[in-house]
Image (tube, rainbow, N blue to C red; front, side, top):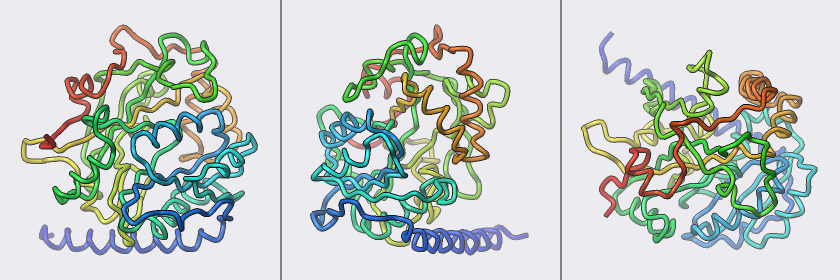
Length: 341
């Protein structure tokens, strides 16, 4: 079959998929009840942050502070029936718009329907960062240049999206050895990472790179590395109404948004999301999520966590490296400045 015909069929198929995802998101908006809608305060050039969460009160003070300092102007958050005070904490923040829902996380495509709706309704025309409360964006020059410097450069370079590999961080001892306290910088505890041990392949259908590996692959999926969690993400996008996330922030539609790498021997600018899941709170969180059964593939990932945690694993190994900053990550090839001066 001619290559042009295959490309045409894929284009039609992905267009239909995108329209379906947007229709789902619009329908699922009815599940969201506003708690504090401050979207009228969003300025025309505001940089927005979108989050879906449940029971993250202990993490939220540092998370909000980190992204405010980075340059986020407004947070749009869906609280999925928290019972730990997260809702009250967020409702009192002047730069947060908050919605709540008791609907199924799994039934909303793991929160993506809710996020796609908020992006559709409020994100259009803005640079939008979509992250979890345990993810912290690091990009070249982030120590001296705010997020707006990055988005201004991306826009002037005609880039619509910015990729960031998920980099799992972990402590030197066992995960539960040191308690994580509210407001604490999680990197003060989980400061180590794997500098290598990553597998990369291209997704032919969507065009994105699929990255796996790191401590989760070797510690929790050692017998089944091809089912280890994906580490590729495109969290920062100049949003338009016809865009939609397909699977977490791993891939988007239209397909062109996933082409955030250079296939001709050069490099495009990229960052990382420092993933601080592995704190003392993780043990209780994994038990709760396994019981709820609201995650992908029958909560296969959380079953693997729960099984391994019974032996109090230590993710640190002799090859582990302690985090020092973005320049270290660039030296290791985990982020790139590309042609950003």
